[in-house]
Length: 70
Image 1: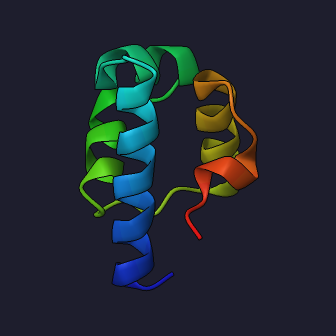
Image 2: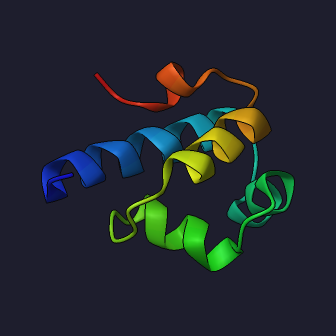
Image 3: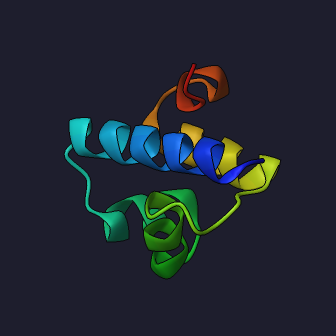
């Protein structure tokens, strides 16, 4: 994944999280991942695995394809 793709993913996930009125900590708890990872992900410096993306989608109440930007 390129840095542009990571940044697009970062912006998109942050937008979905904010629309759900969740803090990074709340999302991390719901997705069973570390809050610092959510922070790194939203800054585009973490490259999430498929399983992490599934956990985030589940926590955000969306399908995986909705989590991935066009």
